[in-house]
Image (cartoon, rainbow, N blue to C red; front, side, top):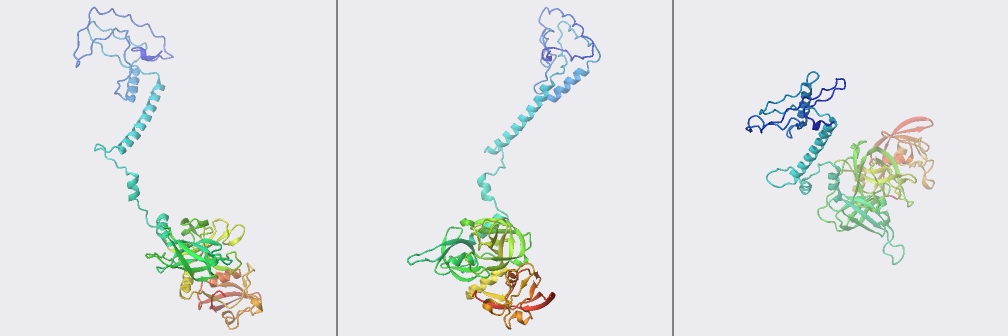
Length: 478
């Protein structure tokens, strides 16, 4: 039975004896009881058979109601319970103590609903307070427009570095000259370059501009969309570096700052900017994965290869990134993105996509080459004056039996000859670098300058020896 419709009944004890019958009902009052002041005893009750309230007052918390119910049950004391007091005629009757509720499931549900409602109210109040604009509620919410205007990215973030560098990076369009009379333009390609100085010099890769170097056209487009015609100042095939100059350079050019590639450490953050597959102003990030990585690359045209002791990065580099800057976390150029490892075609600039193995010419070397090209239009290479085998790998760089066209492999009175090197010697060390092949040796030689003295470790007749070579020089690519 429901306790909602019983008066002073208490919960039944399954182990208790049967409840005795209720006492007889008193006779009805002969007349209405006198009125009672609101501040005094309550008004006379309805007949005793009328149900009495068992729920707590509306303003009382649920917990208080449960406690009150438990207290009422606990005060019954003994069995059977005392019958309800029969009021005297004309006397007001105090309300009976509230009986405990048996429907505990209803109480649990009430608590859960209360929690949900409270959460909903809280959320609603928060939204209401943020949206109201009167003086009653003070809102700390910042509108989207205000936050965008006030937001500033900290220096050193990728967004901040890229935002500062992008205006100094250009997308280069190179088109070869017409192959037949009347043709104005031939095939072309897209690459990247960056502003080197305020005079309008742009540094890029040689393979980016090689097709347009003889009778073709070149243009450079900035991140603001403005395009300027350009011309080749000088190219270095061996280094894969070229310098262009804008024909009508705009005012206010901001050269990118140059870093020190010798101080780069494996794990340093990198930011690459370029036009991969023609998508200008693309920014990618990564780290320096390795240093002094010997790389031989070519443009696929059958021309001379270039060699570099490269910075390796996992920043995404694709065709079109060539010639673009590789930046450190402060926005300084530490390399020129030049080559990628392809899964099928080896090193070089193919149409393969990035697999996380990109290579950049160290900026210290690129700077020296750029200065040479700006001054004279021709590159200067350090040399040892010996021809080495370019196919053997693993054992070192072997000095060939003879040079090109049957000439001696060791130039008479050249640096190698003066150092006592001979044909058949295997060079295994150059300075503090281990040498495993001819390309590795050339890559290391080209990190130096003519006139530098370098210790060489070599093997002859199974014996290891050392000597010092003072590097000579060669001007131009031919």
